[in-house]
Length: 338
Ligand code: NAD
Ligand code: WQD
Image 1: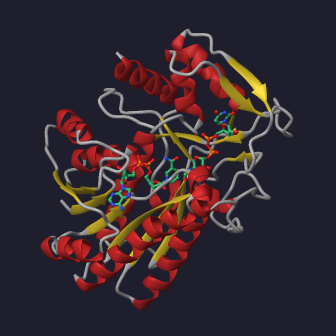
Image 2: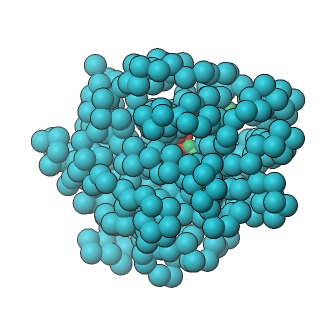
């Protein structure tokens, strides 16, 4: 059994990861400043697992608070660092807030980890680092290209900080590059809670179907794909959560091959926007109100993962398909609106 600090543990991916850590017999300690989450999620986690994780409301931008936290928890075996801002568009409006939170918090944590001899670190990265990849599916060898947004840049810089920090022999780190996380816990007790108007496709679909939004805009049908709409690799959040347990165990058990490793987390299957809509209509029996509009700036044509390294080296594979993820996303949307 390991004791794992989960930053941003009340957020979308963090909360599902806490459940999977607990299921695997580990102890999760959550820190979150509730900037994009609420204490209800803590109750949700406790309801699902019957274990109330320890929780501390803390802002990771505050260096002394982070130092104090890790001094008090110097017995932790590893850190899974989710806490960050994640809205691509907002990052263009407020770049400094993104650098301050996503980079500042990371540096604070790494310094405090070093001071307390905490050696194992998992970082939330993103497929956005690959941009418009030349080869599909995208493997970890695909080059990292200049970021389209300050948000994307914080993920690239975050990885570079880990490359440098792990050279000293005091830290082992894994960066997990997520493709498109969707869905919710099958209990519908926890799930994704986008603030304001959703920017991401799946919450926009479910909010349209439930009546919160009038119509989904499909951003472009003139891409060079099988139906003209963009292709993405949509991965169920519970599959993603399980990968974090596998990754942190890999470090705690010292099974890593290098001090810094990178894995793609996706299903390996690409779906077009229209295929996602069809999947939703099939699983819900609802007909979705949508129209094709102009392309959205910054969207790449296609991105889906080559999962060979995650399958063979990490020993993890996504188990749930698009229909299952859409079923859980829809169940969650219905639950929170009733
Ligand atoms: P989320 O916003 O639901 O969760 C992040 C949590 O971190 C929130 O609960 C928020 O309150 C907390 N937080 C933010 N800043 C903090 C700070 N300074 N101190 C303490 N807590 C803080 O986001 P998510 O979707 O669960 O994403 C988790 C991580 O995965 C992020 O790093 C994100 O960039 C990355 N990621 C997400 C996606 C996605 O599509 N959801 C894709 C790729 C990568
Ligand atoms: C998916 C597809 C849109 C909304 C973003 C971030 C990325 C990562 C995941 C954090 C695209 C289309 C969307 C809508 C639409 N996050 N779409 N109508 O853009 O692949 O990735 O989230 O790291 O960094 O950029 O995800 O869900 O926004 O879009 O037609 O209202 O759905 O054009 O093809 P994206 P998304």
